[in-house]
Length: 346
Ligand SMILES: Cc1cc2nc3c(=O)[nH]c(=O)nc-3n(C[C@H](O)[C@H](O)[C@H](O)COP(=O)(O)OP(=O)(O)OC[C@H]3O[C@@H](n4cnc5c(N)ncnc54)[C@H](O)[C@@H]3O)c2cc1C
Image (cartoon, rainbow, N blue to C red; front, top):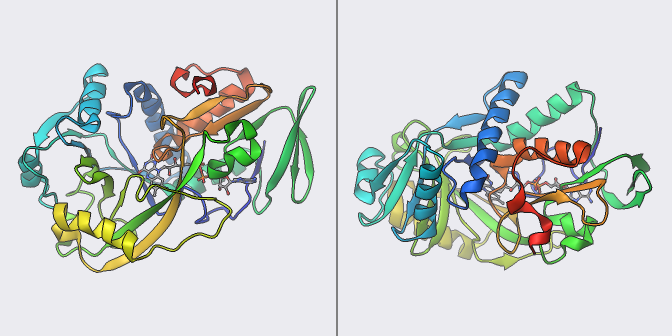
């Protein structure tokens, strides 16, 4: 197995940096993600055991907001359909239990105890260590410049060499359509900004006192975390300013407009988490038109498998997406139901 990455082992140019990513089980986006999530949880715990360190921190999660919105309704539907433990709470009940939260009382959320966050860069390093320990060859700073099908495999060209292999898995994030032109217009990069703001009452923002959240409010959809790693309340607005971006173009640094969009959210809903700015970082989403992933074989070349697991919510799945890609590459199929993720739905 040969892995090729154009940048360093950890880098800030794609979608996976920034210390933490939310994992949640009662999936409001579509209940058919739940079986994948169950397997993802198993594989994260397996990786923790193999690597001997904690990667997944369970805090519980709060999902919902506007009582008639798709996030609250979708989360309840997924929880009920799959028999997941959960509670439905009003905004006031949330504030009583987790006082950092100041949600309007007519809002509704579900609390799901299995939610939490993954230490995203630690997870990458753990996967890398385990891949190396199991005999994989990994090359960093070696951009793939193209590939072509062979009768019985593929030839891959990089800035340094050419390789032949029986199977190819393309998981190039925001650069996917450069390597698979059939994805043009289907995997669209979008600029995101994340904030860490100082908290005035740290005891309300510890992982024990603060469940992660995915909230749909009148201003839009937001996600957030307890303090961990970088001091401060970390959160972002889903789709931020809806700015399409060229992943190879110059990266615009976070600016005062970005900051105000995020700060105004904290001011209203998390006033104890609206202190001075600790950090602002940009990151990329890679959106499909329906915001579901693409996990499939290449339409013309079945020796090539494609993973575009982003649209802003793919990190939690990367353990199971790895297994799915291995199954697609080796056996041409996966035991999991991938019908939501087929390329021919577009
Ligand atoms: C701000 C933000 C917050 C998010 N929050 C969450 C969350 O809370 N929970 C969640 O589940 N998901 C979340 N997501 C989404 C999640 O992070 C992404 O779905 C996931 O990181 C995508 O991983 P990826 O491997 O597809 O992309 P990437 O991590 O970008 O990896 C693709 C890699 O391919 C490499 N590459 C590209 N082209 C080439 C080439 N030609 N040759 C060699 N290498 C190449 C790139 O350098 C890159 O390292 C968030 C995303 C962002 C941006």
